[in-house]
Image (cartoon, rainbow, N blue to C red):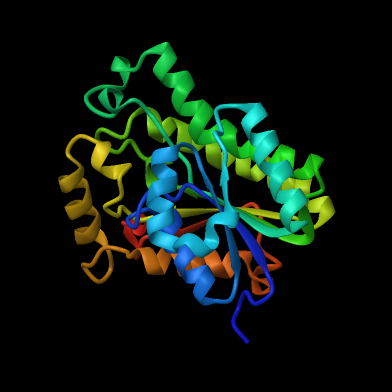
Length: 255
């Protein structure tokens, strides 16, 4: 039996085949999970349809995490159509591209709020709505995606690093409060991979090269490796893990 046979997982954040969310969805599907995909706009839906195929159209739900009404509609639809789910993978982040470069003092108030709203508060909003609707099974798992820039001042990461620090703190408080109902909440700190988000960072090629050079084997982490860790965290084998940041970066954070 595959690791996730019989489980239904919501994946938020698939933009294209280079998305970390897609790496997670692919590995989880291979491990037997039924995947429900959320998307924020029609353009993303077109990418999803190409990746997953038309047979999964009933498992593609529109959700704009900047809107509480949109989150409510999406999760009510999931509840009505699928009942309870066994996990939610939150792989969402956004900041203005012109504020991912130079000095942190270049960041505007509106840009700071935007990065916090989409990249950090959205995890709380999603978990809150799932709890209100009794959407999660008693052994469910929520996994979010973070990066080492939450702990160190990575060149050009700037406002996103601050948002990721807030995301990790949000994860810990959610783990504390949702644990009473059996729900686990963790974060994966993934190594730098060439995603759409990373290419929006100035000097992203240098960041990718530097990350690979600092790994223990001189190779960058892959989407499958990140997806494998995520599949483990939502599986029953990880019942004792909550409130943690799990590093999947081939040791980059060690040095």
